[in-house]
Length: 180
Image (cartoon, rainbow, N blue to C red; front, side):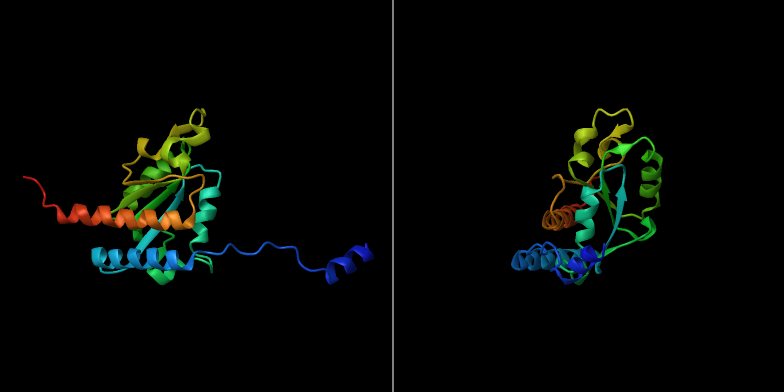
């Protein structure tokens, strides 16, 4: 036991280096997102992430947006603990029967204007869980979905590009006059 302890104290740590983010692409996408959000809202956008029954791979990528590599708060993107403060709902995973009512209540608690983004293959189409007895289906079977971001799981840069596309779609809706 002592030998093992001494060996671990004097050996180098076995870790994997952090992935090298494409700093130029990240800065460009982040600046585009911040500009669109400020033009659309006059402030930053707030996101509420909802796990409707996923395997947590998509959550790991969403949480990576807040780590030191991506640091999306510098672009004006904030995550909220309450749907009452959110502009965007990021929903991951297929909607399970146990989460259907909770997801509907979260959507109802989110103030207007609100957008729903289905993140990952499971949220977009059910993924490998599509035929499970415990699954209602994809997110669009329960809520109106404004944007689908596919991938298993989607990379953080893809999530940011999806949010830019969502801001473009939202600004187009606002610029079109209502039909009479």
